[in-house]
Image 1: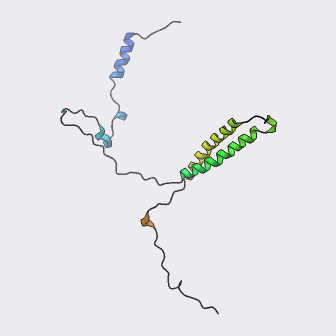
Image 2: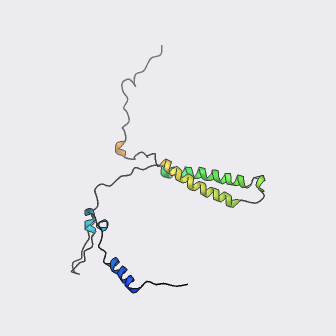
Length: 153
């Protein structure tokens, strides 16, 4: 087997091109992150503080029922696939005298994973009501029609 190595001029040329490459436009910080740029402090007694400016447009994501959907979907699908795997394994046609806990466990894990994922996706479509106490409607006061008593005839 012949072993070939790169020559010294080839390695030196590659290192010069890699080391001397100028930064591209995609590597430059945008103007909103200009405060994150590194500037070495010239004076050790005056520490250089980098100020981080956060945007004022934070996105508020409403709460959903994704956790409940994942629990319900995972439980239902996991129990179904575990019982299906156990039933198919202990079938008399397949010589069902041996225990098949490995198939039951595998069916449960696959069912919990896929059912939980699908349940989370479905539950994430339903938004939870807000718990803001200021948005609660006041109780309706009785009107004059509600207090009218009708005499029996």
